[in-house]
Image 1 (cartoon, rainbow, N blue to C red):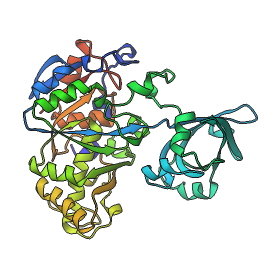
Image 2 (cartoon, rainbow, N blue to C red; image 1 turned 90 degrees about the vertical axis):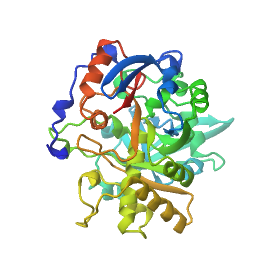
Image 3 (cartoon, rainbow, N blue to C red; image 1 turned 30 degrees about the vertical axis):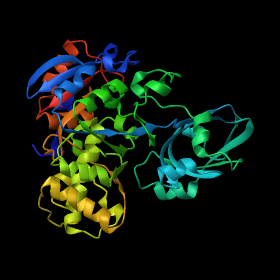
Image 4 (cartoon, rainbow, N blue to C red; image 1 turned 90 degrees about the horizontal axis):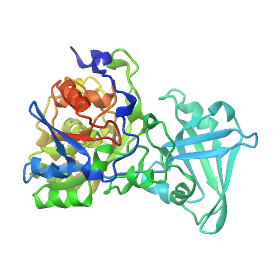
Length: 418
């Protein structure tokens, strides 16, 4: 069956609520690890992961950091409005956004939208002993131009009356860390620590790359001692990662855009490892596999602008863009094309975006081992796993369900070797 016509109902399974981990276990690296090795399945403890990895292999982590993206405002009428920051609008650069002072704009999801038609929302608070008023207003002119785009995000302008305070400091003071909706509970203070990876650095995600939550400094040190070469990429995880596939065939599902950053030294190291990696999490997978298609595009468009390197949802399944036929090229040539492009443009890092959907029928180009948690039924993440293990996902999930593995973001994980 052609990938676009896959029926999402074929990727359903019973997930009782009691199997969803509402909180993490007390020691991250004592979680369970399912080992799937070419059809054979067994159970391990996560802290023993390094002994199952080939010495000298390259492992790639997503170093994104979850931001306190939920903000609450109360109108004079008493109505509570939630503004959920989705992606920066002005400035669009994440790093600049968090440094900005005085004003900025975001594309946001808005809770209780019907109660906020017009007017300015205000919130008073203190930072470092200084009183501050934060204001939020919907930019209707911008929103009118957004209407034809992917629907639920609204342009919101923020301003505050203290130019010495950055937006990063405002989020630390009044923002709330978003936790997955399926946990069905309020965010707790402990989530500020447990819902971040120990190596998180670059602010921008609204959901954690959860496969990374199992790593501790002890496990990272053990990886180093076992000769595993560690590298980091950045993919800012959007709320769309929780978006269920609601169409019968996956052709009708629109993937969300996520922003990625990969440094030149990471690409050069990838080349030295014959473009084969162990990916920590599905976000690292989407980043690495998207790189291949960016390199393919550069094969025939060597002078492309950075924005042209965006990977569309169905690029891997179609012969090129705009009717141009693009033949598959080796992964090392695709990655070398990106390195050459960075050199020509005197850039140290690639900043781009991806909407890639990885589903059965997809041929992996770069990732050859995967560490990942157990995902929701009928989700695009389950499609990605199925493509990786050549359809064996049900055996893996049946084993996990019958052996008391914990599921979803705070749950246990698996090492998949196809």
